[in-house]
Image (cartoon, rainbow, N blue to C red; front, side):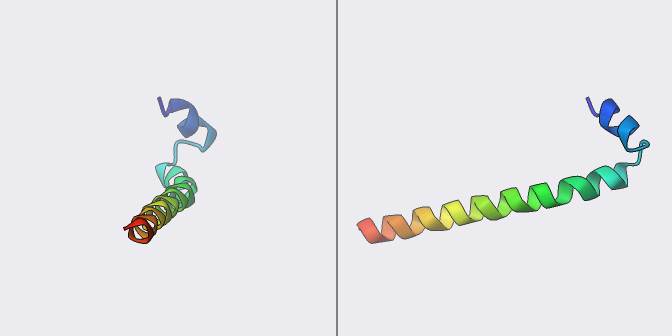
Length: 46
């Protein structure tokens, strides 16, 4: 599955991890933001 990616980046898993790190960080931040917003909405309703 990742054979194409490894050939593009010279088979260096560190480069792939460094490129994926900001994406994972942004996803986790957005998930936390959505959860906090949902909690605030529930508090506002009740």
